[in-house]
Image (cartoon, rainbow, N blue to C red):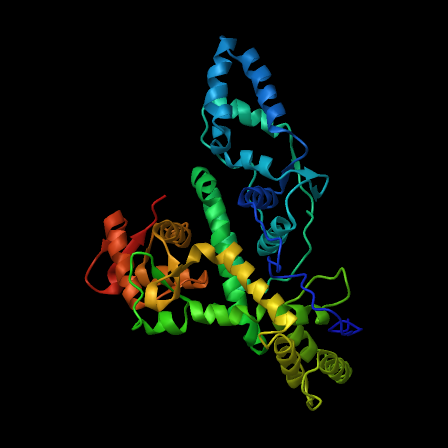
Length: 440
């Protein structure tokens, strides 16, 4: 197969893959997204089953089952009037994202883009069904009624994308598997886990855009402080590899990813990351000369169309890719242009819809990336996972694989936080002898 699209035509900048936000209309229902992700993870769905009808079905069933039919009014207050039914078992979250056949019956376009992101992080991975809940007799009867309406989900509605960040796929699947072993913790923290990964995915994607020549991406340094810490200007790693780095790299997301769309195979084929397309092109020696020519023709047309300074034709594939990405970014530069305004909207929407919980303004230090105590505990539990405990340095490596880096000062503050929580064992004063347990 020819390694890139057979026709390279200059047109409008379009973005159809990898980034879950657009320059407008990014309202996200995390409740809906949570139901969608759980449905995809379990490969199960609910079709057109109204929660009110479910309540009536439970009423009929339990009044027949119980010696005192009037007891239903108590159960109704306990589980339905209070909405506590959604805290009984993760399976009840499937109500939040229902299907018609293989298509999602509701939800915004932004919700479905996040569904695509998480579906491709899961790939062929799935959770065991049913989830092993510890329910009382009444709750089990309600779940039995729900199970009558739960059906197998086939391939699902999401477009296939080869994961841009394979290391994050590994972490996400391991974290889902861990959550599924603790159903009540899954109920409590699945939405927060998805928000954590949505941010980290977008941030790590931005940081990896420039490394397409290096093959499969690796986790890139992005430093946070704890929300209990002061943001000192002396924190070199936080200053150099924190919010400012993320902000500057995120400005490239729309330009580079829209240029990537031009290179994809024909419509309907699985989307590929830039690093994979470059590798595929290099490895296809039979067509490399033709690809180089096609890219050069496209680049000259693009430069003229966008009114950019003329430049020499590329003499090899690496230079052709460099030139493509250079002009893709260059067309958005210049603060007064319409394209610059569009790109700025992409960056603003990303910060406001995906990243807002992780960014704080800290006086003279300006904006910094911050982890609060709830996210720290979640990240800790996910990273320790199926282990009983981890050494501190192993735990921090696990944080980094998930895209969250802490400097030595934050690490010391973290240990003090764990000691207050009572989930740390200190064998000696050296860092290697500090063990951290999960709190689940």
